[in-house]
Image (cartoon, rainbow, N blue to C red; front, side, top):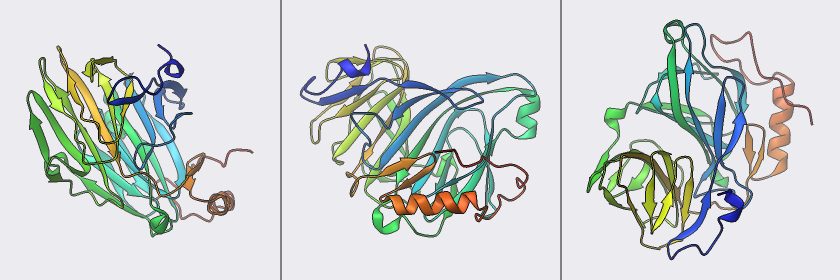
Length: 300
């Protein structure tokens, strides 16, 4: 069913069901869920892409050339494969399944994402979720930073046939070591057949995304690639008769509207215009060991 037909007042707990839109990002297609015409964000999450699964033959891979960000933090979470992160702060960090790469753009950062030489030579499958998290207005011009957290450092949550890792924020009495700037939660995990998992209600805005399989939320079947957005405070749980992989995300509402232009996010147009000019004028520091290429500023 098209997302436009699935709107509010669906059940006591469900506010909206969003179906993804296919987007070609060059190396492969992604399924984009946020931003959506009827819902620009869930908590601080303003961008949500499901990458793959995509299979690359030996010699192939992704090459996202250096590009800028402002006003946000990026979180890449992989199920399969590996991506090499490099940025203009000097960090080089491959990310592997279950780990967290958190990059705070703040006033401005540039980075690239590529398939490393060994993985490229062997061939591989890439599958994961990439999200953007809007920084509060008070923090959107802070100094950029980068942090890596191996999966072993992330708390686990297990309940009635479900097992999750807490990627960022707080939920179920646990707190992730990842530094965040506003109340939020982000979990990834699996439900086994017969699982019955209560969705936390400690955050005002909440969403469930089905990576693969199907789950039932408040009596509605949610299929692979769909995001269900819950009403604030409404009790809800997930059930499945098979194996499913899901992400839970949300938090406190944003402190105002956010503008998104290309890879730039800000609470006002002046910040975006400044970053556009700086990138056009080659004023961002170069990405270390990836200085020869960059993505030009889009026209318009």
